[in-house]
Image (cartoon, helix red, strand yellow):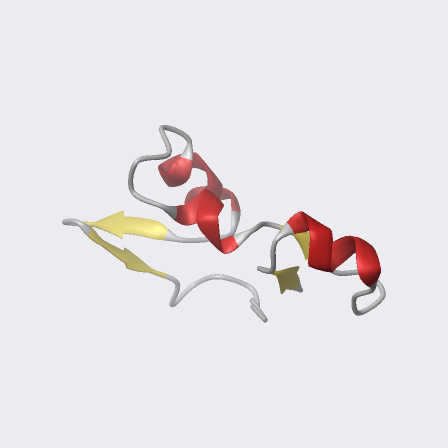
Length: 60
């Protein structure tokens, strides 16, 4: 489970077990964006990300 809110909001409370990956981290200007999306189970398919074979991802 990924809590995509900013760290300040995450620190105020979240769902137990959730990890914080702020939505701003997934901006195309982030040089680590592709590595993060791949770690979440995605595959880059010609510029689009395919999460078909990811285990299960809940983003809130």
